[in-house]
Length: 247
Image (cartoon, rainbow, N blue to C red; front, side, top):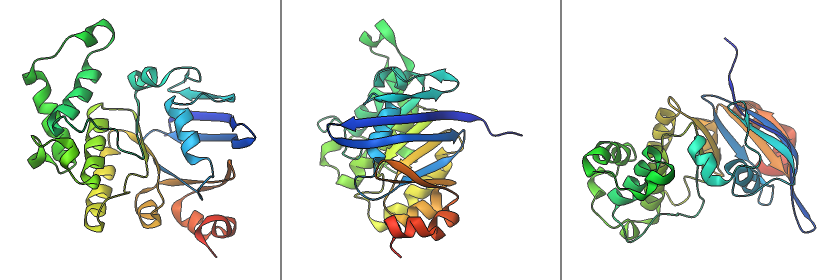
């Protein structure tokens, strides 16, 4: 059976003043993939993800998601269509409990438009909130203020919020940053489990995580795609070693 294209980026460009951050980048993401984007600092990785999520508009090029042109849709419109981006820097509500942070995401998913002004009863939210927190291993921290957790656990709360939105495409920006080595193994297991229900696109500098998780890797350098392929192919690619991994 032929692979199903979930997302297509076609010749995307983005410039900031005199800096060409992204240069004619094209990629195709298939449903069910775990795709890693790697490259040195300044390669254009986060700019590309910001364009996919709608936080930035491309100067030129096109983005197609589930067969529909989303190039000019705003970020919130893309969330409603199933694209969720968790950030490199945590974006939780620190004074709210872990439960309430995730509950906001669940309510946003269930309700849209004018109904966002209403509040769902807790019995509608609780099962999904508790499930999302259990998935990231924070069921015991449900009532704790999110801002009092360690940085690594705050990242997991943000991941729980993303999972609670039940996206088609979950975008993660350096998700293992701040996690202890003992937590990274559990994180990888969580992502593999999530990939059974959604497509994962992530930026990750920890190459052991990339090699363990990714079904395909895209390497960027100076705003362009340098190489693309399965993890072992990328690991052995001479140009990648020279630009990023070190020869």
